[in-house]
Amino acid sequence: MVVASDAALRDGISGLYGRSYADEFLRSLMKQGSRFCGVFIMVDRLKELNREAGFASGDRMVADVAGFLLEHSFGGFLFRWSGPVFLLVLESGREESFALTEGIRTALEAERRFSRPVTVSIAIVGSDELHGEDSEQRMASLQSFSRARLKLLERRGGNEVLDQSGADLRDADLRETTMALVMDGDAISTDYIVEFLNRREFSAIGTARGGEALELMEQYKPEVVIADVYLPQFDAFQIRARMLASADLNRVPFVLIVESKTDELVERAHTLKIFHIFEKPVPLVELLGVIRYLVGHGVDVD
Image 1 (cartoon, rainbow, N blue to C red):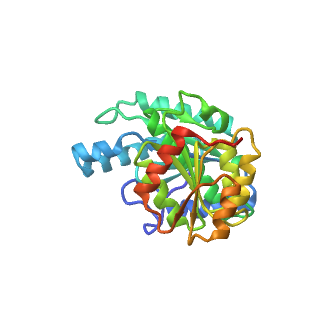
Image 2: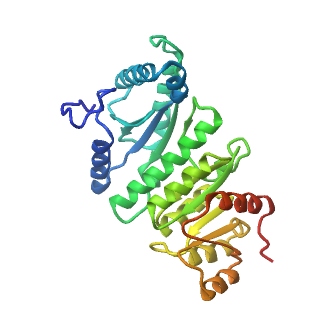
Image 3: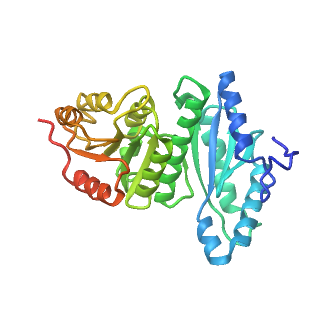
C-alpha cells in the first residue's frame, strides 16, 4: 500500500497520492514491462451530492470512501485520480482483478458507516490491452479506455464493474447512446470535440494517434468517426480506406476535419466516400447536426 508522506504530492481531501504521482508510478510499471490492472473507481453521483448538499459534504464522502478503499485494497497501490475517481493499481490479471473489485463494490454498497448510501462504478483496464511503442502512448491508451468505460458505466446508472470492450459493447443493453470516435493530432482539439459530444446523446472517445484510432475502432465499433486529415502513424485517408475494406466498419459515417479545403483534398476525400468536410475551427453545432443526420442515414458503400 502506498502511504503518503510528501504533502506536496498528496491530495488534500483524501490524503492519498494524487494524479501526478500516479502517472509516474504507471509509467514506471510500463517501462519495466510489469503486468498490472488499472482499476478506476468512481463514486457514483458525487456531482449531485455536491450540488444538493454542498461541496463540504462531497469532500467528506471522498475522504470516507478513500478510507474504506485503503482497508480493502488487497495490497494494491491506491491514488486519488481526479474528481470522483480513485485509481487502484493491482499487479494481477483482469480476471483476478475483476473478482477482487467486485468484492469492493458489494462491500461498499453494504457499508453502513457513511451518512448516506454509497455506490461506485469500477472500470478495469489491463496492461495487456494497452498499445503503443512507448510509455507515453500506452498512458494515452490507458486513459482512453478508462474514460470510455467510466462514461459507459455512468450512462448505465453506475454501481457496476466493467472490464472489457469490443463485441460486448455492441450489445443493446450496453449501447444506450451513440458511440463516436474523434481523432485529431491536436489533443486539445480532440478533447474539445469529445467533451461537446459527451454533453449530448453521444458516448465519445478520442485519440491523437492514427495507430491508436485503428485499435479503438476494433474495440468499440463506433457509429460515427470524426477525423483530422493529418494524424501521426496513419492519416485519415489511410484509416478510411481500411474502414471501407472492413465488413464491420464500411458503413460507418466519416467526417473529415482539415486546416484548409483544396480541390485535391476534396477529390481524394470523395473517392473514399467522405462527403462532409469541416475546416478548423470546427463549428460544433453544425458538426452536431451533420453527425445526427449521418448516424440516422448511414453510408452507401455500393
